[in-house]
Amino acid sequence: MSSFRESVHNYWVLARFDRPIGTLILLWPALWALWLASDGKPDILVLTVITLGVIVMRAAGCVINDYADRDFDPHVERTKTRPIAAGKIKPKSALIFFVVLCAIAFGLVLLLNTLTIKLSFIGAFLAASYPFMKRYTHLPQAYLGIAFGWAVPMAFAAQMNAIPPVAWVLYLAVTLWALVYDTMYAMVDKDDDLKIGVKSTAILFGNYDRHIMAILQCVILLLLFIVGELKNLGPFYYLSLLIAAGFFVYQQKLIFHREKTACFRAFLNNNWFGLVVFLGLLLDYLVS
Image 1 (cartoon, rainbow, N blue to C red):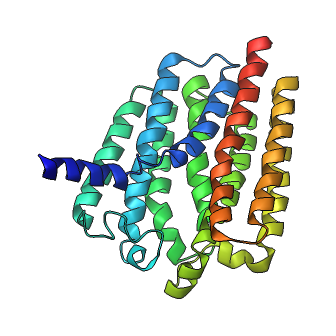
Image 2 (cartoon, one colour):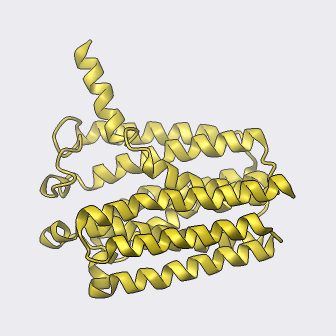
């Protein structure tokens, strides 16, 4: 029995269910999209499927990421204890687990309309291919944004059976947001990545990393402002953007000296950014 519990625990850790921050950061944009697509009244089935789909696909993404990085992770301080790197789960078993998680996610999306089902194939490809990008490009964080942001058009499609222009504006904002927070995450591993030859925007941006992220954060806020204008949102939403801008300023303060622990705290702080924007949308639609 203890062996079974240990095995379950290892798969739980492999899927990062013990670290929900990644799920939350992925979930907030999906919820933004659903509330915008439904004018604050999302269909319960759509809300349930999208939420569960985000949870399952984030887990699948973590599994395939560790499978892809199985030769790198043992050499990185932060990742050397992960189940595959530590030899607790065999790579083949992890791959089977990934397929099972994808099958569960696909089973969920089959409850939705045809457009959303078609979009799910693109989402699955993006999630499966992302982990291998760091071998070929210094922009894997941008590719992560494209993959993570795909929840936005899927949410609009599920709710409206269409993808209006505002969805693509939001998608761009989410893509850039993921690029920023994953660069903060990559700053933690920068030294190890340089040693083993892994590429990242933290390396590509060099000494201009803080400046580039600051510019991108301004663009993100501008795009979210445009979303508000396109949807005729009210004061609660714009107040949430003001508070969210404060979180961006705080993150810049944290990464100023590029200290690893502080950079990781900056990454974690993005959860509050996502939450406050959602609360702005929620309150705006509740009082309108």
